[in-house]
Length: 402
Image 1: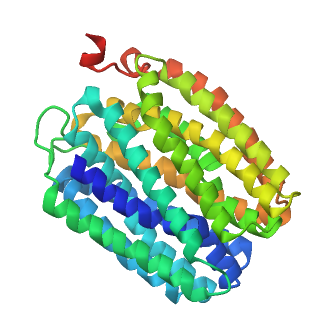
Image 2 (image 1 turned 180 degrees about the vertical axis):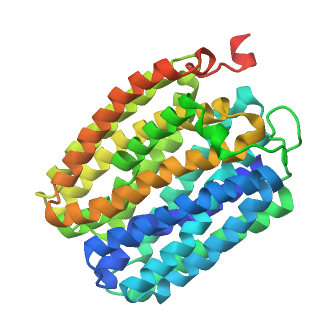
């Protein structure tokens, strides 16, 4: 498990290098309008909506380890092609390639983590994954902010090639050092049959991933829009944008494990309701930055990202462990694929709609997102009644309960 987390750290660093700057690259460097840029970014998620379930079926047949390796190779090719993009249609093609890889990456990695971890330890394992992922993203965003400048298009090519290299490194590390889960407690029984129809009949699971799609659409997908808003509406520099994302990461690295421990034994859905309120508060603050100087705007956005980070920690303490607890072991790959699907629905709709709304009303997009986050909080409390009683609270590890 430690090796898997180290590989994830390397890979997340590469993702962080390009995450804040993809919108800026396509719009400010390549000259593609914000609306089509939003659609290009959304294409990544839309393609993953199709690829994810296909990967989920294959994971249940051949295992998460092999499918993760395949996903990483596809992502290497996709991100290495971004420097070749000059016009919109090329952006759509490259986004489709990376979408296939992302469609396989998340369910494969989640299945591998769940299969290698005993059920009582899964909240801690997924919390550590969130810490590692965000540490890498934060360091990568900081590095990317120091490298990228719209005055030098080649600087963005460096970012994409660096990200592609990290996917390749992760694949090599994972294949060399990470074992396949053994068949037994906490592992999925490969080749045991089953279908997505069985998973979709699991109403509590469907309710949980539906709620997650709302939170991703209203919350996480804003990360794609925030950098271009900050640069174009408040003249925040690439370096300042990198620092904003880095501070967000530092908060997550410091707070994720303590918050995961605090969540032990507590009801899960009120925790998700609280994260919705925190995210709404963060997005309400963002429009204020648009009327300030660059330095003040960067400080306001940093404060918003600190609040948002606490909500991310709450999400990390609840969402993935809850999915693993609800899943039937022999169909774990399919459960994880549909869980990843809920993320991709949000990431598809967020940039696709947000890009056009941002072009028309730069402030309105954040107020709308805040309202949807509040709606998610209400829905979280309603979903609690659908969950089986054992799944309503985060489990307490045996050592902690002794």
